[in-house]
Amino acid sequence: MTVKQVRVMKDSYYDSVFLMQVSRQAKAVPGVHETNVLLGTQANLQLLDRLGYPVMGALGITSHDLMIAIQADDAEVVELGIAAVRQLLHQTSGATLSSSYQPSSLETAVKLLPGANLALISLPGAFAAAEAARALELGLHVMLFSDNVSLADEIRLKQRAAKLGLLVMGPDCGTALINGKPLGFANVVRRGRIGIVGASGTGIQEVSCCIDRLGEGISQALGTGGRDLQKAVGGSTMLAGIGALSQDPETAVLVVVSKPPAPAVAKRVVAALRSLAKPCVAHFVGQEAGKTEAHLLYAGNLKETAAMAVALAQQHSYQSPRPKREELIQIATAEANQLAPGQKYLRGLYTGGTLADEAWFHLHRLGEIHANLPVPAELVIEDLNRLQGHSILDLGDDRFTVGRPHPMIDPTPRNERIVQEGSDPQVAVLLLDCVLGYGAHPDPAGAMAPSIAEAKTRARQENRTFLVVASVTGTEQDPQGYARQCAQLRATGCRVMDSNYEAVLLAGWILRKVLA
Image (cartoon, rainbow, N blue to C red; front, side, top):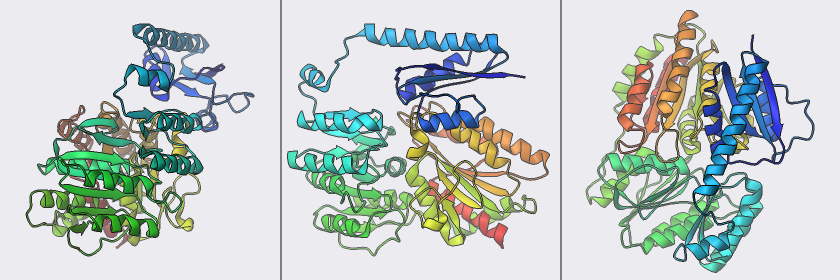
């Protein structure tokens, strides 16, 4: 029997990544089984309620308050855990304040770094837009990492940036590579001749990693934020980024990648690419590849986007990297033959939104695939906590990240979902991504492995097989190590493919065999 208790610290805001680190360290207290240190947002209150903590009856908790939730052997150990959290909060914040002078405003920071021309803003969405506006008035380009920024604020910021001749990357811009410097979630890739503008963080990561593995490199990679190609925003940052890279002497080939765009905005982007003298590759996830034009190739998936760009950079004819159909069918047949009667559904648990989009687009022809993505209304997941039928879930969606670290940083929410989906006797195959690089968890595959192993063990005990197909977005130079991450997943019995596209194809063929 264990005890679950919650303490509230009023008016105590801390960065969510820092709180995740404190949670991990406090869990080391003997007798403490679980520690959650979270901001008092409505989403986090609901999360703790689902986990069995006594919070929903509490009044007056706001997003500016801190909640310390401890599960331990008894009430005395709970108090020890709470004391450990308080000590960690005090020690770490004190060390940060005393180590060096920290400017208290953007204005002061600009005075300290007069040569700086870009501000990276990572604040709760309610405060981020105001700081981004202040950065623009100070003459700074902006990378707005924050999510949960309103569409109206995004439009206002980008209109102001255009008048000032500046760039606003974001909001919810997770990835950029500027002059070889990674910002946000980015991988260690070689410098080269290919420039990317992406309305897609993990899309940029997947393409840049595939380019690196094919022997080429990246000149610049500019993120725009996932909504930039919506009709209301109009592709403002995408068009500005295309213009900037068209003038960049280090960029010989220009790549555009985007989540599903508004048709009218896609036409404007294509028109801008057609006007360039440089060769270009375009890939709009969720759209069929167009016909080849002079200096403009259209890719059908993220891996193909990389292969086309490399071919143009090396000035040789393009050869499709598509995997052999017969080989995939053979693997899928062997996997499907292990399944028990009644196992018929596919579930995707993604940390990368664009990778989830790519999966849905290539799988939806096989049947009704529900998702929390831009899909037809009848296919939108109604209950995000309980999936039914074929479903693909983007765990990086704003609804999951209010007051919590992104799942690329803290894999705990997905690990719990892996076990949950593996316990469903109707699930046949689970589709996963594993994203490496700066900003990501130091060992995402290692963090997932116990959950995959547990799900597989439970399935065996019930005389069924739990199939897992995954891909790893990364390079060998990433801090996590591409080969090591792949090996850890394979050790659990997971089938690891060379790209998200190939993982999706294999999962699709398994589904075909199940439904045949």
